[in-house]
Image (cartoon, rainbow, N blue to C red; front, side):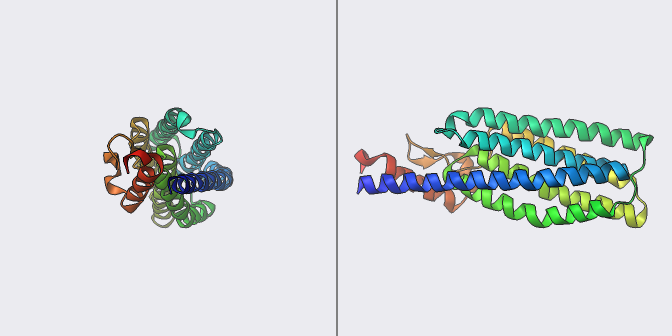
Length: 243
């Protein structure tokens, strides 16, 4: 019975690790395309928000590459701390650049112009990113990987940014509120700082079993049944002597 349970848990972890690598690959592919399109559109329209959105896509690629590097190892947990640091720093770099560019725009360096391509890009991301983020976060929680959950938050941030960007671009296009673009960029920067701090502290909610006490860490309180499922699996698969 013990051997069977151990094999089942090991197989499940393998499947989840493979899924996370696939989600990371999908994130990289989409965001490379999104980054090129957003940076081009932002340069044409002199839009701080669009440029910030494009840079966020570059940061997401960096984060996903770090996650892929982690899960390419035989023991991904050994690389988790460094990967979290890479993800956190990527958030801070994004926030710093976007803030400087937005303030520069507000001080009169240039008014953002109407951008139909930017609106299309924001709308597409608003539809695609939530699904990808949810799938990766679910796999990360079940596996108990803080980095996978943190990277899914990076992807979820793209959803927030898409909504903020879309609002700013539409207000600029329909009402001529050029400053809405810079305001949207500053909101993007604020969200990035918050998520960067959480990633640096390792406060990505996930289901990491506590081997000594037989329960999930306190950060899992909001994770629901995934945390319970992994804890039970860990109990059955790693502590046969106690049953």
